[in-house]
Amino acid sequence: MLKKLFKRDNSKKTNSRTSKTSSGNPKAANAAAKTSVRGSKGKVAPTRNTNNAKPAHGKAAAKSTAPKSESKVDVKPWKLEEFKVEPAEGKTRFHDLMLPESVMRGIHELGFEYCSPIQAESLPAALRGRDTIGQAQTGTGKTAAFLLTIFNRILNVVPEERFASEPRALVVAPTRELALQIGKDAEGLAKYTGLNVVTVVGGMNYESQRQMLRDNVVDVLVATPGRLIDFMRSQDVYLDQVEVLVLDEADRMLDMGFIPDVKRIVRATPTKDIRQTLLYSATFNFDVRILIDQWTTNPHKVVIEPEQITTDRVDQKLYLVAETDKYSILERVLAEEKPERLIIFANRRDLTRNLCDKLNKNGHSAALLSGEVSQEKRIRTLERFREGRVNIMVATDVAGRGIHVDGVSHVINYTLPEDPEDYVHRIGRTGRAGAKGVSVSLVSEDDAFCLPDLEKYLGTKLELTQP
Image (cartoon, rainbow, N blue to C red; front, side, top):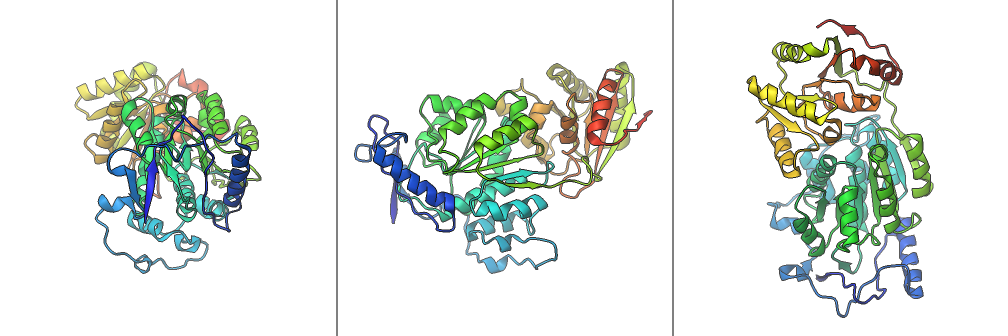
């Protein structure tokens, strides 16, 4: 059976939107009912002219219902029986969630067996279509929680007709690195589903991203707010068919001044009683909680409280040093600790740039990750770091927020962050997935002003020692 793929025709508008919904998803059924009402009124929903619309160029004009990924992936026969995970007391298996087999195959290939706490507590409600708010520390599996919810919905609720430029699920993330990481994780989990994941961020080729939106059916769109607004203005993407909306790190978007853009994005999606809304983050401040009430309907709230804000898996060392001695102390730490893979954080872009140059001149293999580096170069830099071709990454907080690299043995705070939450996110780059890690903070007289707020946030006294 072939399914036609059309570009959206904006010259004329009709209201033909028919989809098959599962009886187990109340929001899906509600969406279908709302659609027919809006269509009968002849207003509200942007529409298409199905008689005059032009098919996308080339071979994309006809789309098989078979998974597209088969042309790219060496697909061998696979059965769920090959994925054996024994039941364990107090643990939730992915088998227990009744996920589509194609999704289970991706989970199996990535080596996951049991849900993390945030996944185990949020997924049952989210998979039923309920709005969900999830709060847990970084590195605990929040991304997989919302991606599995998206894939389950898209694979089980199949529209009869699809158009280019209309994603069914939208994930909004505050930084380019985080959006790219989410896109990469989505492609891994969706490897055998045939779903099309598109990631659009600023700092990368606009025209190539535009073509991905206009010439293909988009199942999952991952985007940063600014670039998404650009495509909305140019009418290269329409959000009125979004069934699942994910806002990741909403607190960070508020801090970075993105909330006006996010509000505009949310308004362009179906109303909250039609779409499913998911928010997962490490923290939700008061302002974000007000927005949550505006954007969600009776959400299921999950808070995974750690025994302490910082993990026991990270050995935290704080050295009291003079500002002028910082670099020499850094060299001593590198010689003594011999980190396998290290991220050095500093507060300013000029400081990270100078520090990276100095490290390379002194025989180290260091790479820079900051906002002043072009996006293409940042992607190449992250890949070099992941592959071990460089073992030191020097980063600012905004750039480092999206770094999800396994095997980071050490984190060094060359300067303490002004925001205590950033300290937690920094040291959270190490000690991930059960591994041990080390964080070293070089605390000068200027940094010491940050200590009282940091200790209050952590709920513990930080011991300063001489290096």
